[in-house]
Length: 436
Image (tube, rainbow, N blue to C red; front, side):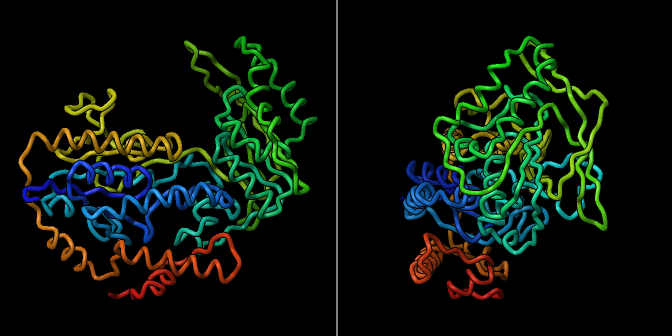
């Protein structure tokens, strides 16, 4: 079909892949750019290690999307002001629209003293490492026996499980800014960890925070249920470890000895209730907890060097969108550039959310395309530009080859799954050299 719209989608995680599929099904030609060699994003590199069935189900859907003839895949390309190619250079290729679904690649930092100590990490870096995403897979993490995780969402649960089951941690503490009623994990995830919860400690902790909850007329049972409802379907305990909560506490710093972490300092909080919005307020009272590992699981932010304006850890969206979907704005302030998935709203929801958001973003793009004539971009010119980057560019065919090799390797080794841990090994397996 002549006069076809040609759209660039940046990022091949769930949001980008489902958006690309939606656009391709609407008849557009799509160039899908990805930082990683493999497609899948957080669905490939962010899901807990042992959830093989879930991962395989998603991979199947992603393969079907990539199999569409009007989607071209360009993997192993970083886009940004410090990348292989800038967003402006992508736009200069003349695409009819650009959809940014590159996720939230930055990590939130609280800027606390001691963040540079050995033993202090960000959750995303650790998750990427144990899921074998280069270059995180090659980084050394020193994980001790007594660990504190800052946060109380599903990522905290994953990290606690990993520390207990794979790193043989003896004690894991979830440090929570607010109270038990404000924890963010789901019952479905917590069931994997709850059997390690020290019930005596939990009762004592509930007693300790009781006055703060009563001060805002919060029912104690609400928080208790939110934590303990997972007990009914709890996984059996397989390790000799303890998990507990430290509620109403905000980290204020880390202390070390010879460059290694030895203590976490926290400030005790009280709760305030403003029109139903529960916030934590510091009391000025500080205490320390002896730990050898601290992991921050406090969410993500977009990459400020990507080339789009940002505020509050997110890319700026048009407040009054011309092409809203479900009353939401997917439009950046730059004409023809849209955002979807975590690039639109960082750390929001799981894969199902990213899929829905990607599809909605594609619908916003489609509305926009209907207001203009196709620019008739030459697909060969796009490929030529990528080849000129002087590095191996990974295609759909290359990915298929890599998947087959890794599957064969898993079978040989009697493993459920095998992944190469470095880009060099993946490129070598596909027959691509680093200086293609």
